[in-house]
Image (cartoon, rainbow, N blue to C red; front, side):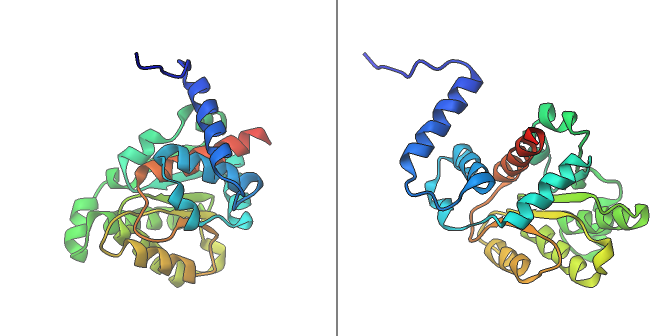
Length: 219
């Protein structure tokens, strides 16, 4: 008869999963808050290989935590990432999440620019932050390389006092995903967290936000 581990609640399953990850990664390539983020990403994917490609600078982690503590807004490029972000944690921090593809005029703007909807959505959301003079923003890109590329272009074109607090750059795929993340890493105006190479996705973008939110709530 098949035997299963005796864990039945989400918290007990998560705790057991983290213990397994801790036991299987030795030595750990990250410490402290960076390891907590990396561990949650492994937990979301069951993929230990990502440890070889993660970029989790302490400065970026601190920037993300501080932004969340000050009730920032999070812009993300998919509804899936938005849904995956813990409302329980983010509500306690008074943080709002907006899926940029839901913004008005996205389709029309994409036709005007002859670009993807994700790229057009980044432009519209960026314009909104500039008009409102709101730089207390985290961008969480977990799907479209075109969105990340356009975001970095806008950052390069913008003065340092009008920039977001953090970019979580995790687009996935075979066309420009790896290149878009290399492009992100070449700019030095905005702190970033990323996973180099083709891997990424909305699940990882949401998991990164959730890990940062947990750290922010802890103090």
